[in-house]
Length: 427
Image (cartoon, rainbow, N blue to C red; front, side):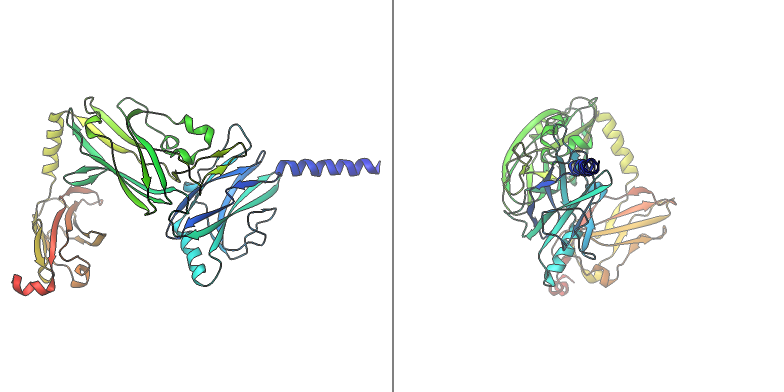
């Protein structure tokens, strides 16, 4: 009788062990950029019956790296951060016990790890994923080795900015008349690693179902069997280019003559990135190695345009002109000494505030909220000092109503600052 009790207890424990099982992850160690975010495609194997919950990064472990633990292996006080919900693209494979996790390391985590390395601690840190089943928890870690972000880091996209090249500058939304040729299209891509960037440009036409976030993910951000499930649209052009380990590239969009412009309605241009071989980021699923070059931890943003009749566009321009604020000085592309810099504009009635915005090439320099009776503003010298000499600075005015909404605006106007050594000659 006693032997039966022992056998029963053994079977129960064995069953519990089989439910939790041993989780294997591949790759178990990766190089990541020390300069910012990196995304890596991870495959956790043998996860049947388990539920993935928390994901976090820490600087030190109580157990050996890349081993399974039944307790949280992070040393108390060394947690750098937790996986944000918006970054969690994890998915369970439909035809296996695998679990796919896209580990996107936030820049804040990299900064903490870099600061610890500067203090003489280990330059490696760890990503830990927690799994639970029947009240039992299991943790598995992935070693993250900080590197320069070049060729030995997985090829991952960290930011993608598609835009129309217009006379007014880059635009993410554009209005097009029927049968009017679109402006050229470009996309600036920030990335880690190096390798082949392969993909295509597609267009969503009026009446078609808009793509979901799932459809806008890069192929390498999905398990292999789900990659063919993304919705496809009209193909405009394919590309296959080499990415050097420089971290940034601007690629040309499709031939603008092929961009549809005949049917009135809303359109979307989609940049679709296909998975390519990547030695640093490919993953062994247990059924073979899948290619993960071009992984991204976010849906790729679509580029939008609207085709309308010429009559409708002309009417919209008239309405826009009626809400346009006329800028007086500094005049377009006019050099001016910093000491004489003053902004002036033609005043408008029935507004509550003016908002002045001043930018240089790097971004905002200063802004000011001004009373409605004002039509000029002289900035303090300390505010204007960041304006760049012999360079295109720009400014504009927005008019706000009582609720803070913009009811009228000006175009951006460019101006240059004269170097101090030339100011006397200018006078």
